Length: 272
View 1 (cartoon, rainbow, N blue to C red):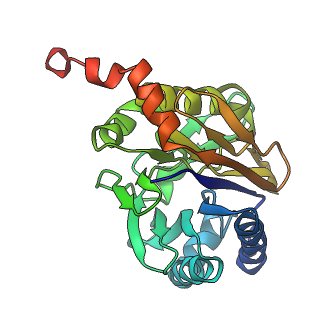
View 2 (cartoon, helix red, strand yellow):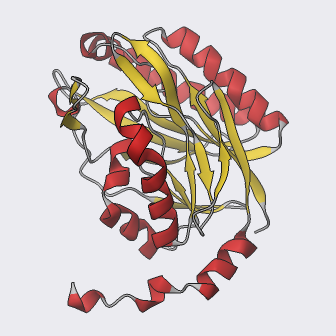
View 3 (cartoon, rainbow, N blue to C red):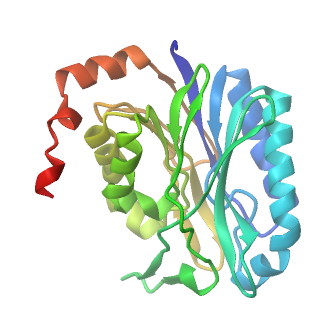
């Protein structure tokens, strides 16, 4: 496996799925033109709006999202992550599902978000993801993708739970995907430092697509889609505008970091 380019897409998704799909395709095309082979879309890439509308749209939107990911992966010949979209999970509930698709259009893996964002923030915003989202009950997968290494999935709020990433590290993960719609309030203090911690402690690359800007009402996202190397160095930062963070994933560099800092080999699980 040689080096390759990874792209973390940054979007300002709204309640208009057609406009969101068009915006996503524009960035996927740009990433492919820059030579990216692995492209990640953020959480809620197809819809950011009120819960009632999401629940109404979910049955048709889930099918649209899956078709879109397959079509885009084939059209632009990239391995593509749809970082989170609603899938019906019973009356009044959806899963928040990430889906990884190969450049041939094959669905390689699916993951339903486990950790749900139920938080009262000091800025006055309250989030109750569990009110309409059903948590997944299966740990996220690690997929061996030819030419790209072992890719592990997660979604947004998962990043605050290091044990989930230890599970992925135990399976020999090379790249941790962390698509998100991180709030502006928490993002300014926690987004980058959490992602760097997950990269360092698991000696893996992190590719973190992100939502940015104002979506509806008071819902605002932090932005700063990132690509981070196993030493914790930020290789690319998309800032706060719609766009891309693109950087190389170098297996040789990862091997050198793991040799210099073999902390995963030093763990003593019997004590914990």
